[in-house]
Figure 1 (spheres, rainbow, N blue to C red):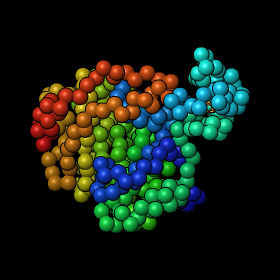
Figure 2: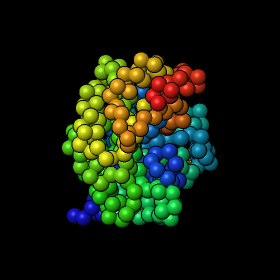
Figure 3: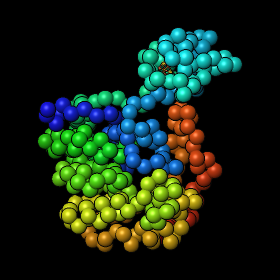
Length: 298
Ligand code: SF4
Ligand code: SF4
């Protein structure tokens, strides 16, 4: 099988991003992640397989339409007070309702795509990359959760002279990262907390492997530009001590930058579409605190 034929599950291809690498970029979001960050703005990325979502605000109403009710073979959709209700415990994720729905209220996050198809899509914006120094950034989820697919995407992009970057949480065997770096122009590496217990509590996983992978990649690829990022989450890592502790893990050398990302809740509606609860409902970003933390990060 050639790299172009390798298949994986992608849940979004987003064009014209200017925040995730150099220049104008196309972000390719891969499904699957080993972490379960409580603030995750892409909850649809976490499970590895395609998953059903229902956005009631787009529904034409059962009186006007009702096609999904007739299409569902599992009794997972019902009518209550003239509203469509989705019972996740009965849903077989067959996506018959998605195919029947004319409005996009029933939808599926995740689609099987080949590397060739993804790169064809990415290359539609080639003219912008050449002018801005941009290219393709793999994101997720954790792109290296589907490592065979992600590595084939990076190699094929290299063959097509597309600039490559990857956004990673760093939580997987080091060998995956080592192989990815061979085809990378820039690495974007998240470090969320230096405190093992807090990291486990808020992301579901220990940070030891993440910090070890970061240290190894810095040592083994001294010429690779690396952007370290920390999403600043109220009540989790938003103190000066938290940022200083992370800063101590980042080598001071040319080519390594450190950036803080302000907390936002733009992903919150998607929790509802997936039948999940957003756990940080009351959290609020503090702009003045953020400015102080950015000073420390610098
Ligand atoms: S995905 Fe299939 S089982 Fe689930 S609600 Fe839609 S039609 Fe029913
Ligand atoms: S098929 Fe779509 S638009 Fe029609 S009732 Fe179902 S959710 Fe609403």
